[in-house]
Length: 406
Length: 227
Ligand SMILES: Nc1ncnc2c1ncn2[C@@H]1O[C@H](COP(=O)(O)OP(=O)(O)O)[C@@H](O)[C@H]1O
Ligand SMILES: [Mg+2]
Image (tube, rainbow over all chains, first blue to last red):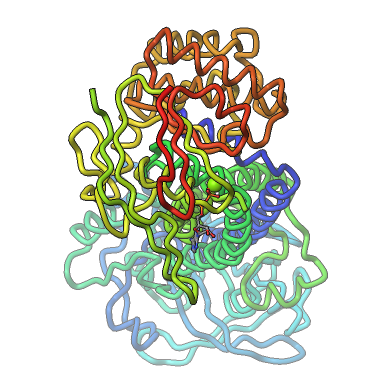
């Protein structure tokens, strides 16, 4: 107790000097923690969009479809699977026909992926219906409607109610096609997606290709809690059997999954590097303080304060010096993170660049508790590391020598 | 009762080009309850001698036996603990921890000895009253005069219940009124509580208060007078 008290008071003997170090640690912390929060926010948004708009949590395919996206590689018994999967708690699912097609407008033509969906089902697994910038989602009574991405619309010079001709092969390989009318234009934060994915009603496609209603190319499964991912995957695999391939979003997009781990690592490295730089300041301050107190430390050793106690006192001083700044820095970062997490940071001027990479230009920083735990551990390590040199300097002193007054 | 025996003690500093025989063959013994001045001009070897007596420095040759223990044979950890439990120290300056009050400074040594909080506090107050600082318990050293600081150091030395108290020129940095005051307090503690004091000085007024005067020069005992 007493040693901690002495250590605490020792920190404040040289107020300005200590405050400079504390301020440096504080600012360094804010820099490291807040920029990590920006990265995490960016990642989290990207993953959220990827899951809620593009992928859902789990996808089921005919394994051959993965290698070769031809319409003959479909999933049979779709309706049976769907009804069974929907019985799992907290899970919804939607089946899609996915067909590569050539899309042409009056102006030009381009390759595209047709998503043949049942609008009422799709709404439950994908938020594409909330991302419309023009027009409406599918109307029940109208046939051959198409929902296109903003990028795609621009490329083909399409407006609402413009006509698009889609040409594609049916299951037997015969070329077929039909004309669709644009009912809505959507915009996500992923330009590549907006350029390549169009939506039409599954029934319309089935009619053109003479598909029966029980086949699909992709079943998308959305879970209310990402933590249940593996559990649900196992259950779904049980339902669809070995003939169908079941993959989680982490398996479909391993780069995205890896990125989360990488960002956490990267954030920790960033904080570690900042702390290491700060450690020099801390060590310097502590060494100065030890040198100034040479006689006092000599006196303490002379009257009977042993080395472990000297060591403990210096460790506490270093810990205080390091932690005051860290705590203030973390609290301040948390305030910044929760404020900007609410209002967002608009990087509109770089929107083009961000969106072409699939990121939102509106950034909402986030931090998880795990990261804070890591930061605190790193700070402890830094404090202990910074204490080594001052302790060595103090302990190798010979009290008889330093106490001599000449 | 003999509490310290010094046999054939030498300290030769060899770091410099010409070796310095700072203590050059001393044989002495000290009894419980002594009030002894070590006298000699600057550079005569007083500090070196007291440092070896207090286990702060190792003899080049010879033995210092305190209460039957040859302290030259203790390892560095043992010798720190030995000092803590057996020897009280008063230095010329830098005696106190600046961030602690007078009372906390006195308590601190008992804390090092692992005494419990209540005993510590009561004894610290008692010791400070004994040196006439009962009204300055909560003052930090910077708020005390040089003489008062030395009295706190004496109180701290007493608080640890040592076998003897070593004071290397305790009055060198204080004025003559404070010097008289400090010496009177030390004398009183010596008479009433039978506390053993061994102090060095080159101040004749301080020497006059001693009951045994050991004069050293060139690291040798020149005279040893008991009054
Ligand atoms: N570490 C040292 N290295 C070399 N010589 C020293 C050292 N310490 C003290 N001396 C010398 O030893 C002699 C005795 O010094 P000291 O014990 O301090 O005498 P006093 O306390 O009586 O003034 C002096 O000549 C001093 O210069
Ligand atoms: Mg001296």
